[in-house]
Image (cartoon, rainbow, N blue to C red; front, side, top):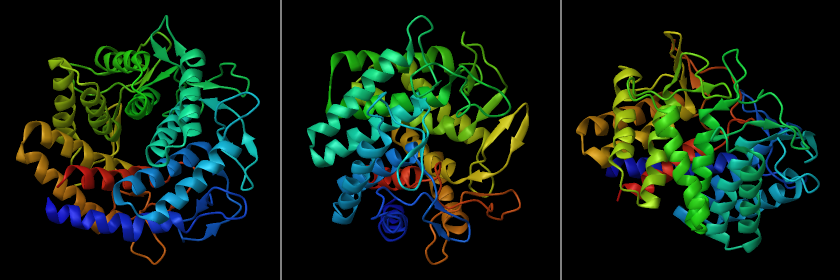
Length: 389
């Protein structure tokens, strides 16, 4: 594990973070929104609201762990863009998409996006101690709870227009369906509230966080199959037979993070976390060490997505810490070897490829765009640095 730690530290500081630092937009604020497969930077590419939050989180967390000043400089820069451009001062909440100059071009409000704002602002507050950042995180929390939570259904909602009128969930529905409720949104509200609780241990927030863990156990986790259900109608009925392997293993450690932070003593929650990890190890890990993407109606998607590999290492490390089962240690090292040999883009000015297809070739997709940021792979590195001593 020590060798892994050393290699990951180098990957973070010498490869991942420099790529994103070099995208800093000094003229219009934020960071350039698109780098294509050929590593051409589009300075007029759109800037995502979620991407802006993820960049703020990444630079803040990188500074907290590594103490490299250049990351803090970029965190301040990312924060300024978030509060001055991404936040809607008229209708409240974070916009979905902005143009390269920082003007909103898609003004829809999504609970998923608000959650990432909380996650990022809480992390930024940890390194800056700027009270206005924490204040805005609390405001977004209030927005989610007053506009985005359905008490009757005990569910967090999805998509709204700029004026907060509910509309079809186009942004987080996939596989040909429109979902009223998604596991993905609940997972990232959990993640956001966990980070907010670290800096604001409010009793009401604690209750909300405990409720989300309970939602996962009672509504999302299938205790028979050990998979998480993915898409639901507005009565929590599953809409499609879909297994999202990357989200499952990511959920296992994010749930455990909340459980540990709250110091919950509940055997059924602990067992859920471990069961998910063993299940994904059984079903999704391939002979080459990688984790494949998903299964829909018994048809496997064998693509190896960048974020799935990163989250899997953290999830299996968390499972190893819980169980001390050497099987998880072997999986971790094989995953890291796969990432090094296949996903890391060694071209000058590169970062990580979007995915590796089943033929072993990288997909011809953007290296940076509104969904691809350093959040997943930087976080994997930071989790290794904090957990492996």
